[in-house]
Image (cartoon, rainbow, N blue to C red; front, side):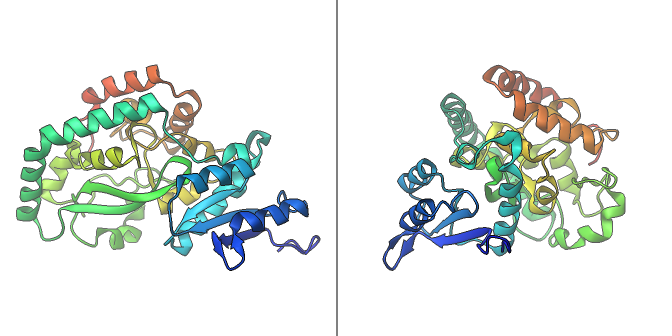
Length: 300
């Protein structure tokens, strides 16, 4: 609560209200000239593009689709508070509903759809081998933060034993990035025998083609981050890395992926470099370099 103005800093408002909708409430704030002091966020159980467009047109700070976990709201609000002051840009410029550029999106759909069709027998074979190799589900599904901090379900072939996430805390001393926002463990003891092969050949990443087809990710972009990593990158210095689409491959993958000597700072700077300079030509160059970078040199 802002004690000087005695108004809330943030207002979460259900789209449907007893006497109208959230837009009516926001217009009242505008009339009282309070909309610039309050972060106004609409909550809706329906993902309606017309509602999103109107929210952007009016200058609403953000739109959350329900159901939503409390931690997701917390991380997103941290990001909004940071990004609202980046480059002095107003909220209605920063928080338009993110859209992958049309040509890039069409390319993503064509490539991911074709790849899934051609590789479907191979994907089924990998799934069978995972089931035979170790107990547990075929897919590892986690919540990741991607483009404009959109949180979505991220798919990979499972390469670790079950409940591996719960063991992460005791392995932080093995983190390849010392005192870092990122976590990458060399010779991770949680990885299964088949999982080591899947990781070193990047075959564990293939289910992300479904994320691309759904529009959660692009083929080329900055890697979507686990929430415990993403929450450390909402500062002025690094938040702009989320202004690039989430991708299966990206700039750091084709330059430093799997190298033991890569630093935390190098990776974050490469993410920023991509976000600030992304183009169709840059995407093409990264995409073509990806095939030679698929096999990792280190077990990380």
